[in-house]
Amino acid sequence: MTSIKTFLTTLLCMFFLSTNAQEYHPPLDSRLLLSGTFGELRSNHFHTGIDLKTKGVEGLNIYSIEEGYITRIKVSSYGYGKAIYINHPDGNTSVYAHLKSFSTKIDSIIKKEHYKKEAFEINYFPAKDEIKVSKGEIIALSGNSGSSGGAHLHFEIRNTYSEKPLNPLDFNFKVIDEIAP
Image 1 (spheres, rainbow, N blue to C red):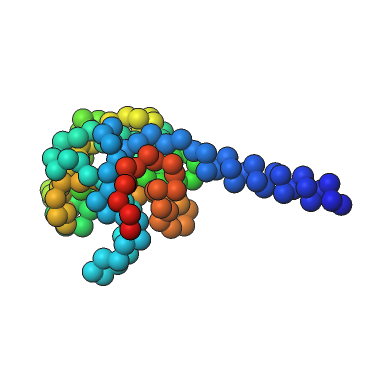
Image 2 (tube, one colour):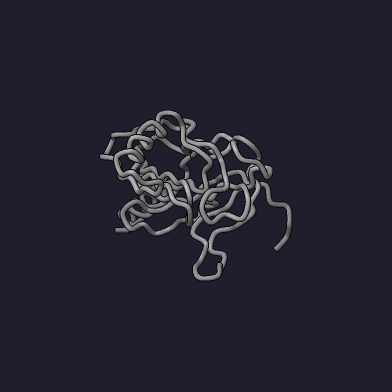
């Protein structure tokens, strides 16, 4: 009986260690500096991601953290502004918001949607595997779109099935933070 308990305990530990060992590609290629943290109280909600500084400029490359397929592309004058949602094989979804522009591959699809809908604001849900992305692929440029107070990248990781926000800092991104709370 104890050998079965030991085996199951070992198996469970290996499972949890392997799920946390995910090596995601950083969403930016510059040093990751925070301007907003996960769970911060905002005026009417809790912050469901992290805000990454972009040196106060727009136009830095934004990378997909893992292979997957785009499930949503949003263009809006408020909220997240221009945003991309990507489902990954590990059961997580990454969200990139306040973008300046999309990659050429994504932008060509979105332009067609703009003309088809005859509107600036769109919420496009591509079919599964319609827009595949690779780990480390440039998907957009950083910006200041939507309800943003300055150039930065709003970045989230969510559980794909429950849509529960997960703290991106739990995924071993090397964030520079030398200031005590």
